[in-house]
Image (tube, rainbow, N blue to C red; front, side):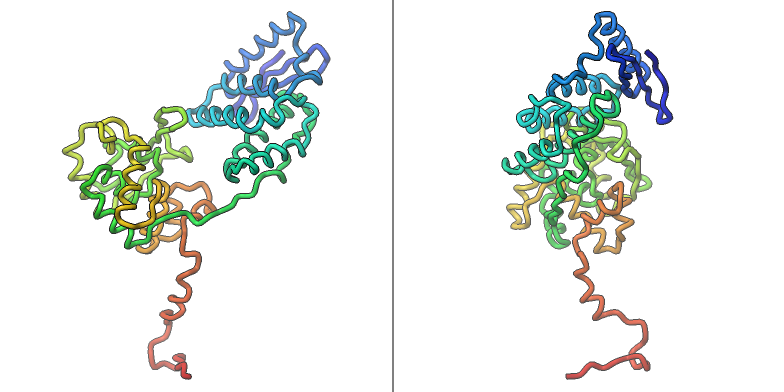
Length: 364
């Protein structure tokens, strides 16, 4: 048995099983790898190591072993939330279809059956993609880390296609009406911050006054709140801190709100505690309904931010930096004009002064 440090900084534990095969598993920390080696030593003394890999091992039995191993590794809070989701996906969508099947006998067609079953239940493509990711990771580890399988039956070509729908958002006039209407109402400050800065919900919940530099008009996005774990995390989505200038209208509102603050958090619930998502969304939708504008969620406010910034000259690169997107493709989902301004631009585009040799008069 041995432990070796890999080039990526992780640790690989190795053991020769009773049937002569080399079993390996990769861990985030040396401690986790040492714990696994100790477990293997105990199994070897009892003459049981290697038997879990026989032909009778079911998908459900492997999931329990795999999930226990990854839950024991050192991980970030977001990964902990993702693990909880993986357990839910397995229990709800995977186990009922292939849980009792032998791990070695699972085929791509059986994986496809899981996704087809989800479609028949009316589950969205995005949910299917998350279940696919769970399957891909689980069976991938069965091949690479556990060496229970020779190949991964979760083929990339089985990945459900993404169906992109135009996100619900507000136009410039609707944004202005919502800001005016909510200004002195419950959660008004939260709405203003989300519209002017496009913060994710977790970033809004975690925003502290120490992150807001009122003297220089800067906001620092340093943390987020992870709903799945109920914990604050010391870095936002994407893993990097970022800062932005605060639009002057929002800055004035924050300056007025600071002396009245009773918490280190910038926005709170009506009870004075941490901002409650359900209560916030309920009020937001009520305001939209009362105004007769599209009723949207907090993510719809983030999409409305792009309308506001593009109207005032922001480029796609500007939006990508503001929203801290990982790729330009993600930012494209927040750009709603899709070329609708071309007609207007063609009618006003001028490079040469009126009366020059290049001017054309259209008649008829």
